[in-house]
Structure formats: C-alpha cells, structure tokens
Length: 419
Image (cartoon, rainbow, N blue to C red; front, side, top):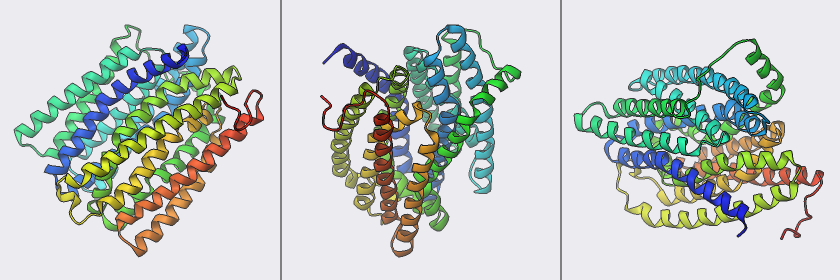
C-alpha cells in the first residue's frame, strides 16, 4: 500500500466516523420509531426524511458540490473565501426556500408540527452544505466536532421528549431541528473566521457566470430525484403513507451503507477535482475501479447480515409485509448506489451535468414504468423491484459514459491494462 492510498484510507476513516455519528443516530432513531409509532405516523416520518434527502440533494448540487470543486481549485485563500461566501449565501437562501416548501407539504398532508418539521428539513440541508464546504477547506476535525454535537444533542433531546410523554413525532422534529442548529453554530464559530453572508452584485455576478453549468445541475438533480424517489411518490400516492412504511423501514436497515457513500463523496470530490484538473485520467480510472470494487464487496457482505437479522425485528410496520422481497430489491439498490458513486463524482467534477441529467432521466423513466406496472399487478413490496431496475439502468449508463469521456482524453489505459 503506497502513501497516497494510506492517506485516502485515513481520510475516509475520519470522514466515515463523522458520518457514522449522525447517520448512526438517524438509523437508531428509525429503529426506535418503528416500535413506538403507528404505521401511518412512521410513514409521515419516513416521507419527511425523504423530503430532507430531496432538500440535501438540491443543496448539494447547487451549492455544496460547486463550492467543493471551486474552493479546491482556488489558488489563494482570498479566492477560496470568495467562493465560500458565494455558495454559502446561496445555500442559506436555498435551504430557506426548501424549508418553506416542506412546511407547505406537511400542512397539506395534515401532519403533526408542519412548521417545526419544515424547519428541521431546512436546517439539515444547510448543515449538509456547510459540512461539504468545510471538507473542501480541510477542516475535517471541525466537522467531526459538529457531528459529535449533533449526535449528542439529538440523542439527549429525543430521550427527554420521550420521557416527557409529548407528541413523539412533533418532539422528534423539534429535537432534530435543535441538533442541526447547534451543529451549524459550531461549523461557523470553531474556524474563528469572519462570518459573511452577501447577496451583493459581485456575488450575483459570480452565480451568473456559473449558471450555464448550474442550470444543467438543476435539471440533473430533478431527474435524479425522480429516479430515486419514484417509489416513495407512487406508493404513497397510490396506497398512502402506511403502505410505504415497510419499504422505508427495510431501506433504513441499509442506511449504514449510505454513511459510507456520503463520506466517500466528501472525500473523493476534491481528490478527483484535482486529478481531473491535472488531466491525470489514468489515476482517475484506477481510483474508480479500486474503490468501487472494494465498497461493492463490503455492501454484499452487509446485505447478507441484514437478511439474517431482519426476520427478528418485531414491529407493526412489518405486519403482513414481505420483508425478504423488499430486502432483495433494497440490497440491489444500496449496493449499486455506492458502486456508481465514483463515476457520478467524476461526471460532476467534469461538469458533465447534461449527460448526468440524460442518464438519470432515462433511468427515471425505466423506474416509473416498472414501478407503475408492478403496483398495478402486485403489492407495493414488489414495486421496489422497479426501483432496482432503475438503479441498474443508471449504473450501466453512468459507467459507460465515464469510460467514454476518459477515453476521449489522453492518459487512460485501454481496458484490461490497468495494473
């Protein structure tokens, strides 16, 4: 193992530890709520987490990823600060708009606590942006402190709410909002730098210059969300939140894999951006093959463990649900999700958002048609297989696009010659 690989593994462990703290808390919270909430309430909570994921996806694509790429490529601290202020201001504006949209949807669904639920989603999206920007500025330890605070406060507030016997769903939203807010404060205060938010002319001009790329980002993230969340949209619309609850619950069991995927994205985005900037396509291709293979094997091992323990989880949400049918599709989805992280990162770094939008759009169509057919002829459990077909389509198309793009540059070895 060379020094470069060792350094990447050390960074991955550090980032995974931070992701593990917060995502482990979400994972444990989901398992706990499975036991104390009705299927309808758990369905509302699961849909709220989906909306949080949607908010994070838009924030990541419109502010966090551009911030990571341009901060990493900055030659001076002043230039890095300028991009940090630009995208940080954009993230604040975007997360506020997404919070208001979430509040409206929760109110229309007659959910408990629409205001605090939307606030939680907006703060979660903003903290996600700030974490990515902090990684780009090599502030890993500060991010870890923020993650530790988020986890500790989230656990403490949740325990207090349950002990007080309040409305659990509203209390959970309150606890998550407080925990995310405190995590944001640490990300702002620990670097001991001046906090600046600006919507002045130069900031708007910087966004205007980047808009030709960002507009494709908007289209890409929309098609990607349609691809990834079609199952939630169709099942909830056709059969209600209670029908989606067992699907969400089984997907929760695979949530730890998303911890690694998110940490991996944060770790490799600056690395791949630097390598692509040097036109070192051979290194890009080798890293893509190496990490995708290793993480894919780990996903399969983890999936086997889930199949062993899933039947022993007792919950009303799993009543009359085909756990193994849902689990098989969930395993395929989760494994492919992490195995196409590398090619997706490469395409994002190369600003190939139009290609990504086309790929995710085609995959979304495959998923929509497949899920609709399966819902018409079978149960919601089998509908998840349609989502798996969508991920298979995206996996194949994304890897093909990356290989062709790297082959078009100089330095990529022919297939089979990578040592």
